[in-house]
Length: 195
Image 1 (cartoon, rainbow, N blue to C red):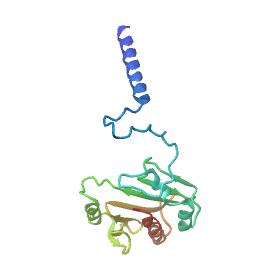
Image 2 (image 1 turned 60 degrees about the vertical axis):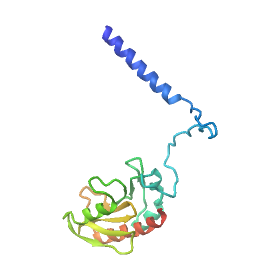
Image 3 (image 1 turned 30 degrees about the vertical axis):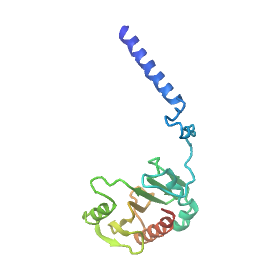
Image 4 (image 1 turned 45 degrees about the vertical axis):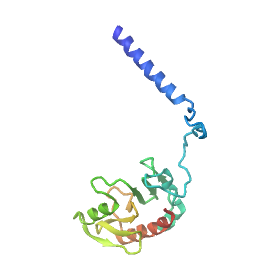
C-alpha cells in the first residue's frame, strides 16, 4: 500500500511540474536596456503557407508546390499531400495512380556534407550507373535501377530527391522514362523557389 501511494505521489509531482513548466510566463530580461520577451505565439495546428525553406527543414516545404502544379506535371489530379515526418523533410503527393516523394535532405549521416553525400551516392554501386542531369542545382543525377530511378539534386548544403512511383503493390511504373521526365519537371518548378 505504501509503495502504490508513493508512486501516485511521484506521478502527481511530475504532472504538476509539467503543468507549471508549460504555464510559466516569460521572465524579464536581465538586461534592462533590452526589450522584455514577448509571450510565445500559440502552436500552429496546420502546415504554414511558407514560400521559403531553411537548412534545418520546415513544415512549409510541403507548400512550395501546389497540388495543381504537381497534378499538371503528373497528368493526374493530386488527391492528397502528406508530410509524414511532420517537419517538411518529406512531402508526399498522391494521385489515384502515382506517388511523388520530394525529400529535403540536410543531415548526411556518415558523409561530411552535401557534396560528400552526392559523391558517396553516385559511387555506391546500387542500381545502374548514375545518369547526370545538367542544368539543375549545383549537381544533379538519376540514381537507382533503370526501372526506378530517383533524381537527386544538390543545391548548396541541401540535397533534394524526387521519386515518382505507382501506387500499386509492386510500385511498378509503366514508363520509367515518363517518371524521370516528371521528376525533372518537378525539380525545375521547385528549385527557383528555394533560397
